[in-house]
Image (cartoon, rainbow, N blue to C red; front, side, top):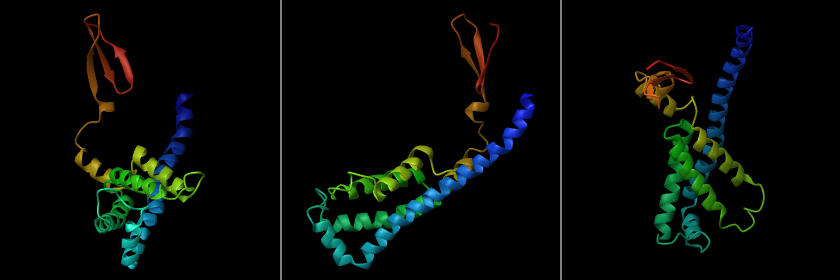
Amino acid sequence: MIEAVAKLVRPLVRLLDVSSAVLELAIRFFVAPVFFMSGLEKIASWSATLALFEDEHYRVPLLPAELTAYLTTGVELTLPVFLALGLGGRFAAVILFVFNFSAAIPYPGILSGPNDHDLWGWLLAVIIFHGPGKLSWDFLIRRKLFSGARSLDRQELDVPVDNGGSERIHGARQRNLPA
């Protein structure tokens, strides 16, 4: 009976695995161009970009406006590429999340209700907490680097217990062994 149910559920689980990988890729491809295009706009009108960072609302404490303009433009042109490729995906998502939040602060009404910044923030949070997914360079690199290592869920561990014996743990299953 259980085997019959498992046979029915297995294809659904595979479909969900593939779907989640595609969704993670779609999230990265949806968010990355937003920041990349912002960087391209800054390059297209450099004098306006410098004026923007000289404005009191965008002024970054302790940094000159010109340096801030170069740094933000550089970040907006490089990190979205890494995010889209899924290379250092969580790192890129964290930095872009902070950028997104700090860009919304100067606008008084922007944090009062749902808007694009909210959507981008939530999608970046998915990448931060879940990772860039199986369709990413991070996944391929991790798989290549750790392909020879056995994962913890497949290892058997002998864990001492109070009665002087040990308990063998294999993945999620546990069984008691005599001392």
